[in-house]
Image (cartoon, rainbow, N blue to C red; front, side):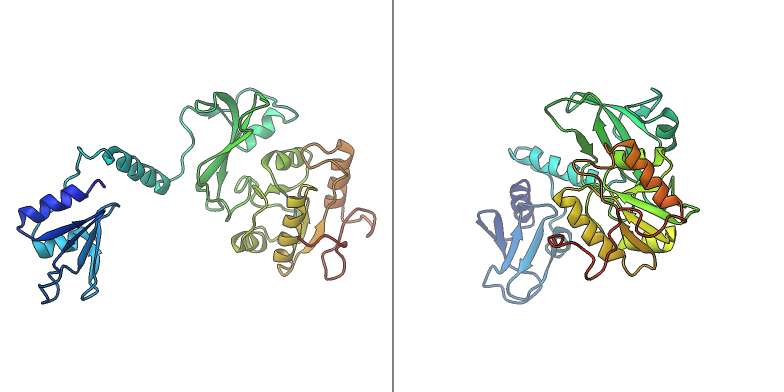
Length: 318
């Protein structure tokens, strides 16, 4: 209750009568003539300090009340044991509202190949190296931008392949439902063909093998992404190649039906059992590239499932 004693001191200084009641301070409202009942309640346990009059229903923050009562501004009560806790909450809120930034001490990726990804491909998507002081692990980090080329966050992966601990770490409270990765690096595909996958490493693998892929950064979808695909990318053929697990199947159904009216041909790629875009056999990746980029491929020569009212197999519905 960082402000309770400060409120009481301010009221005493202005010779205003009050009554204490837990985290609240009751006083007489200066905005209506009834001076018999302390109908105005000041809530001192949060910032900013707010008040409400149950007589005339006037309400607001402390500044408005202080002006009416002529009490002046509140001073922080540094003797209150919860003062620093409240200060930390304030700082965190301000950090959340601040513009996204990369973690401190990140540096451009200069280590060449990582796993099966070449240094040139990693540099093209602005890959960075970062030592995570919290988890005590080296991470490879990818910035996430929106179509306006504004940084919205980052995704970092454990490079040490530890059995315990977090494999991935994202920017806290990253809001990326209006973008896809690695936009804007690959904003326009001349072929007007697009393969959607879940994760960054999934997209990287397909990109490295010549497949125009974008990562959904998970399984969620939004209207903003539908508009992005429809109006900015202007895709004519979209292939959904999410993971074959339950979450991936539900995402395929959800995203497919969200995109069904965008004017593009929508198809679903089924990975072989036990595989996803990141670890599927290279022969399967090559087959996907051929099907996506070669318009001469005859219909029915690939494992598509056309989205429609009767084309999905039994049990597909989430």
